[in-house]
Length: 296
Image 1 (tube, rainbow, N blue to C red):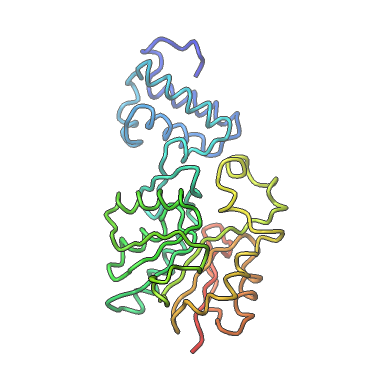
Image 2 (image 1 turned 90 degrees about the vertical axis):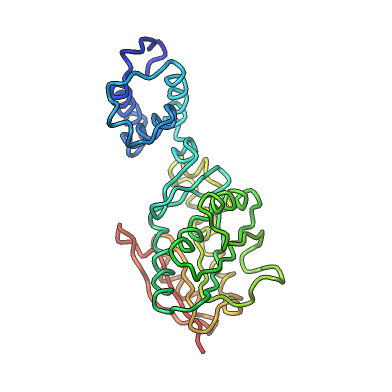
């Protein structure tokens, strides 16, 4: 949107979306049309779907000014989710800030595996541990759909936990306890054993940093992305003690990176306590979640 665009009747919602889509495409922004719609809805205080019924409505000068700044930031590859402060996950809206990893569709596989386990193992109470909870999206999505679930959601980042707690309040989830914890080092008053343990841990190798898209590498929290020279350091830490926290017959489900499923499986079963229970592919056909159970 040119700086000298001052005629309100010229810059209708339809015109703004058309111009911005082209501008973002030239800047190399993926899903440019969707990004334009999300940013304009934010600037105008509307729901995205409301834009479609108002294509001929002119934006005010203040709205155009706000929109212009958002578009500049998007063209510089700042994540759209951070710019609008929200991301949908498992059909639920979640607040996101630069303190947390932006939820991604492939992570919904962890939710699906947990809900499947809950359906196959009906009981009055199901204790679930979400390690590296970030925005709380995994824990909240599961708890919303399974009333038996009681969640401990841990993260090493206090700032991330504040975002998770806010999302839990937003979705009226009082069965989730957020705790500051480094992986499995839980406080003494937490449950000692869990029916389900889930994690979307850091799994990007340090050597792959420069290969990541700029909007990920430069803006999302490095502590939630990178995990040593080969990206597997967190899984090795899990393998040492996770069996002490998982109930016999329980579910351990871990998200993994491209090409990591086999290596992670080998790491987790190498200590002799866990049995591999399956690998699950995302919509791109990538083995994205590896599951295990604890031997009797």
